[in-house]
Image (cartoon, rainbow, N blue to C red; front, side, top):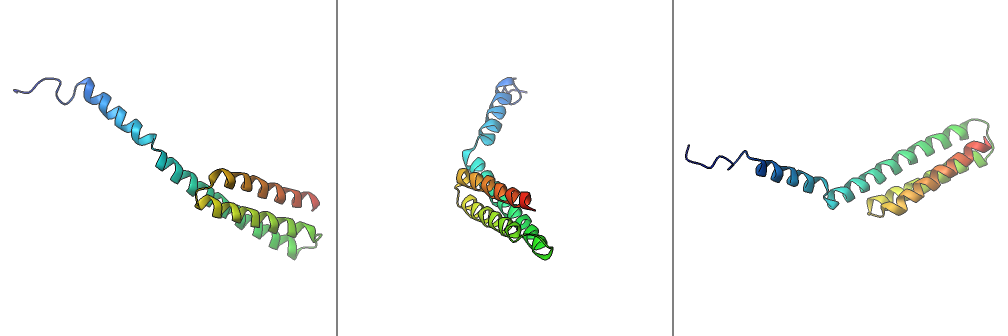
Length: 110
């Protein structure tokens, strides 16, 4: 073996691999993409849940304000999903919170 003993497996190679792994983990593009998909998925799930709850309350005998609140909250969550897909994740988060609060208010009237 004519190569240097620290050419491939020394501590320097391990440090370089660890630095490369950390650079990949701290990639802001991946973080932004993950935040967009999270906002989109959460908004879609809450929209479906709100619409299902509105339909269930509409079928039962409940005050008219209850299904309207669920449908309104679902509409706000749908808007949050659209904003999240466009990259406005901070606004989408606040709209998701507002939509769930509207749905919770409708649940209080039930």
